[in-house]
Amino acid sequence: MTAMRWHLILRFAIGSVWFINGLVCKVMMLVPRHHDIVATILGDAHAPLITRAIGLGEMALAVWVWSGIRAKFCAFVQGLLVAAMNILEFFLAKDLLLWGSGNALFALLFILLVWWNAFVMTSSRTPAE
Image (cartoon, rainbow, N blue to C red; front, side, top):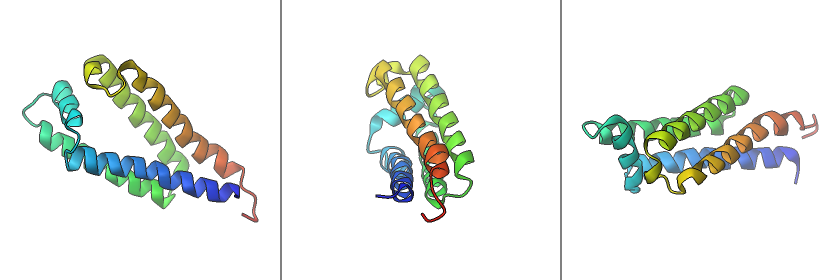
């Protein structure tokens, strides 16, 4: 399989992570832990609305990832968002994280995959691909 094909598959997969987490976990609220994390960090009063707004933002980010527009900047934004989100959750809601402190490892691996796909995979393509 060509590097270009792998790049497109990874771009689709990365966008799907954002879209599914946004839609299923936050907009549809099928994973209550996400609401609980928002409520713990920002308070109960507006947690449902804020959780759904975060989910819509994640879905919009998925569309940006899938579009391929300004992919390197998009990867940078994704890295910042994942890092910021995980730092906040680690210090303010660690007991609600799926893997506790281990979430940091998965966040780092996701950031590395996103950046590798945007910065390495795109530079390794040849004009014929």
